[in-house]
Image 1 (cartoon, helix red, strand yellow):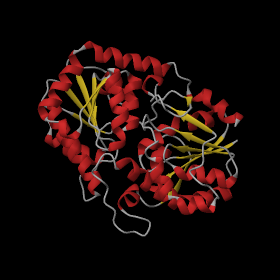
Image 2: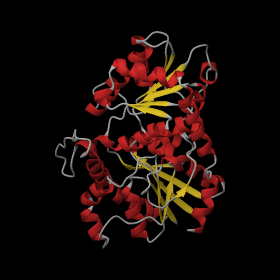
Image 3: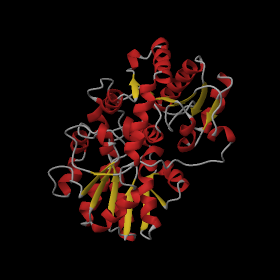
Image 4: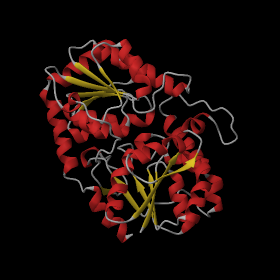
Length: 381
């Protein structure tokens, strides 16, 4: 069987799909993963055949409309979900043609698309093959989909569709305890880590004498003349790292190598750079970060409590559910003062209930069906 996996414009979208793609390939199915061009090396880095579906980075879709006119992202959290759907819709419109060309040369029997890779469903409908929607993380798309549907009216009209095509199967990696009560029916799957690797150093798999805190703002961070989004992510990470470094803890900053040198220059006695989170998180007592969906799930898998500072509206609901479960503390941007951050870190490191609840989540994830089991479900489609 030929299976086309459609990732997105960030490394996280690749890491989310890689376990199932690898499992399918491991039992003999032919697999190709499509992504935005600058993410193709990430696909190859996790050991999967990779193709580019556009040379445009995701910033082009976020900050420009279809005609190339500038677009300003909303600052109101209530408006951000629909806007997210709109720019993912623009990405779908731009990538549907290249994906169609790929399918002409390499026709898939099944298309698996990440949560908001709407081109996957459109392509599957065009080809008349099953479509699987694969959750990237615990972020529900119910408030995002309408924006994409609005943006994709021309494409939906050409396919004779009144709305976004419904998947033949929805795979959800959110632990059952954190799923919203009105969540769509789904087949559960354990969210196994699949980040790219590097040569390990002893500190990565051993613990020191002090509590260890991992600080991250995700994979898309830049301190050069990149987009405002990337620079803002860098400033967020730098400020966060400085605040955490003031605590009596060992600090690990998970960041791209292109910014790690600057962070090491600002902060003495820290480990900074691209680290394999699946290894390093096992040695950590706390994760402090931007609430990125895949990073958050990795910490859940490792049984690590979290301090989450969501920077985008769509991350609010899942981070609140994790906090209500008792495995995290969530601070909104206007709450994240240095004093509140330090107070929250101390609570997460010293109050046993947070670690206990985080371990409960890890056990719940371990009991979910593994990707290998889902391959059989795909075959039945």
